[in-house]
Structure formats: C-alpha cells, structure tokens
Amino acid sequence: MLRRLLKTFWWLILLGIITVYIFLGWASLTSQQVIAAVMQLEEAPGEVLYRSQQKLNDELGNPWRVVMFKRVHANGSQISAINLRLVGFPGSQELFHPLPLKIITDTGKVLTAPDIFVEEAPAPTIAQYDFKNILPQLPTTALVIGIPLGAERFLNLSIPQNVVQEWQEVAQKS
Image 1 (cartoon, rainbow, N blue to C red):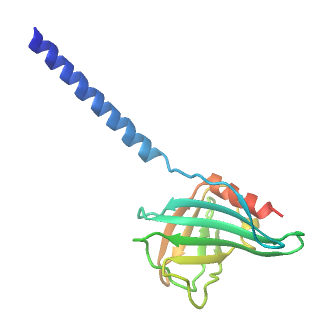
Image 2 (cartoon, one colour; image 1 turned 45 degrees about the vertical axis):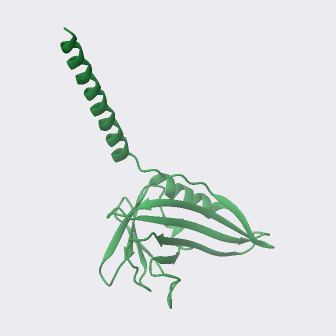
Image 3 (cartoon, rainbow, N blue to C red; image 1 turned 90 degrees about the horizontal axis):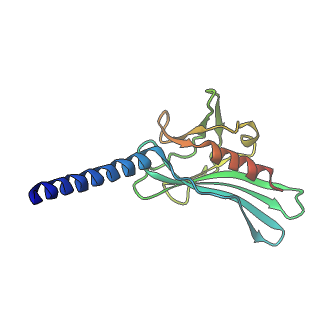
C-alpha cells in the first residue's frame, strides 16, 4: 500500500514538472518582449531629442538595438533629423555601407531609406538611416526591414505594430 502511494506521488510530481516546462516553453515561443517608450532628452540648449528604443531579434535570432530618434530645435521651427539607428550586438552580421535600408509594409509596398554612414560607420554592426521622408509614408501596421549585407543580400528584422506606432509618435513630437 505504501509503495503504491509513493509511486503515485512520484508520477504526480513528474506530471507537474512536465506541465510547468510545457507552459514555460509555450510562453517563450509565443511572445516577443518589446518594452519601449518615447523619451525626451535635451541634448544641447535649444535642441530636444525624442527617442524610441527597442531590442528586437533578427531572423537568425541575433539581437539588435533599434532606435528611432528625432532632433528638434526648442522653438519647434526646425527639425534637423529623423533617423533610425540599428546597433547589432556581438555575433550580429556586419553591415554593408552605403546601401539603403529596405522597408516592406504588410501590403508588400517596398520603401528605401538612405544610409547616413556613407563614408564610414562607427562600428561594423552599426547603421543609421534617414527616415525623414519615409516615416510619413509608413502605415501603423507591422513591418519588415531588410538590413543590407551586400549587393543583393538582406537580413530581415520584423518590426511589431506597436513599435511602428511608437515611431509615428516620435515623428509627431515637436
């Protein structure tokens, strides 16, 4: 009788452990953590920087810091830049300059953003693109950006809808 109770107890413990692993694995596969907020920083007297920053993984699973920022003079009369900066973490692909960034909307429309680091990037895994003319054309739905790795090679990075909406919020700041 005691042996049967112990055997049942161990089966219940094993079943509980397996259940916990299944739920933890399911949660990690179905969610991509995106925590961000539009920040306002005063870079210099009379110049304000609005910034949205996220950490997203590319199609190979490598993490990237994705920063959309806009510089505005304090009186709001002049916008000096709206840029998207991509920073690859160690192990990320080296980027090819000065090829433009490819932006693909959910409808299949392809836009391109020019590379700002035409001459030399600060590091091989850093790129910055001019989004001043692109951002007003973007829908508020999820996007895929193609990071140039060569003449016809791109590394895809999915941009969730809430991040694109945050980029639109950055663009509207003045």
